[in-house]
Image 1 (cartoon, helix red, strand yellow):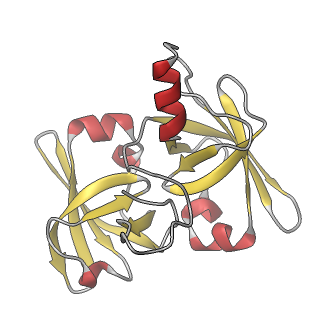
Image 2 (spheres, rainbow, N blue to C red; image 1 turned 60 degrees about the vertical axis):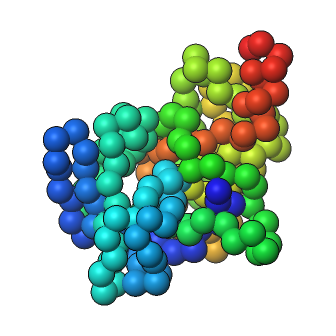
Length: 194
């Protein structure tokens, strides 16, 4: 389990394909501290660490993960938002994030607000995913509050710290992002039969 508070931005330094799986070599500030079999969020996708080296770690994404996320679009040199799993006795600063990406969405606009940035996103509402005004959403692993919420779109406001310390500073119109909708909202919707 995660909180959506990004610890560091890593870099994809190698990609290897093996059958339907893709192996990613990631360089991150805490990579050397990781252990094999540890869960780490990569752009919001929970992946298992399979190898740790000096300043890097390897993870593997299976075909289902590649189809449901933007990881299949990654190239060497791309930045990746990284978060280690939540410590039980730590502060819960974001919201409940499972690292299970529901679907991808598309950035439809980026607006500089002279001190913050507004990002607009659209997504396919058919799978039953929803946002609610002032509710939680995870975009590329970042816990955010959405507004301008409608059937298949929402907006988020990004403060300078988040902009600089996540890969939001490289996000542009047309880019595909990973979305994890609020787990409480998903269960409520399922219970109501929608």
